[in-house]
Length: 152
Image 1: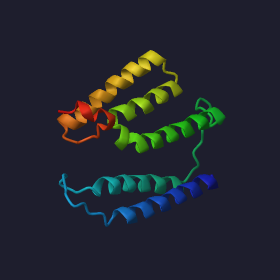
Image 2 (image 1 turned 90 degrees about the vertical axis):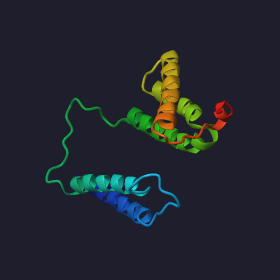
Image 3 (image 1 turned 120 degrees about the vertical axis):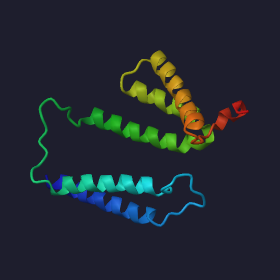
Image 4 (image 1 turned 135 degrees about the horizontal axis):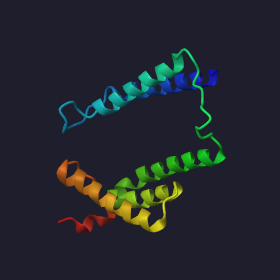
């Protein structure tokens, strides 16, 4: 239990450091009424509130018998998910949203038991639909990257 509390306090310190870094941020332009720093500060505030609860809760968390254990296979999946998300962040601009979403989404689906054909079809359609939703409906520009030649 002490390790859980120490880990929560460590993450709380990380949240505080990130909030201090995000607080003075001012963008040259503002496309939102509250500005670009509100979202990270809100997320860090919610994380900090949850971590405070975890650090100072009265009783330890008791795991039930039906919960999956954190064995090597589960930890490997978590590590692979984090690695895939880092690759997504690195390829988002150069490859574009659609291509990088497909390249990361299909291995993610396969990692959790998806079959090849449904994974490719569903992830491909979702990537295109999400691009259209963000870019055309919500006016949030997403990079096309390699598919830039398709744009008007």
